[in-house]
Image (cartoon, rainbow, N blue to C red; front, side, top):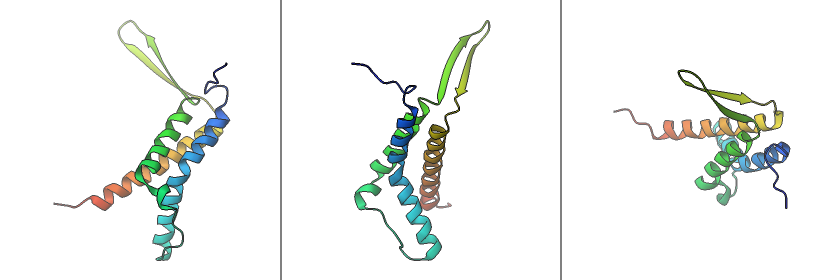
Length: 119
């Protein structure tokens, strides 16, 4: 039995990451549409907007698409340890990384703004 690494099938991981990002995308889209129109145009099913599904899906999408895209190496130096971050040009994985990071940022900013109360 062979083990497929993230380097062998980066396209599959991008597709799976996109699938994991869909609940968050639906939630953010429905919120934006409601803000723009003033009425509830579309709302995803209740199971898909559970915080564990939304945030867990985004975090899993980030990790799964960071594996084939990013590589961190350590190079010992004379006086210090040098860390090098390489970013591989894998368009699908980078797009899903950007989508998941953007959605996570929008949700975290919304949570902060909704719960922030000046003292």
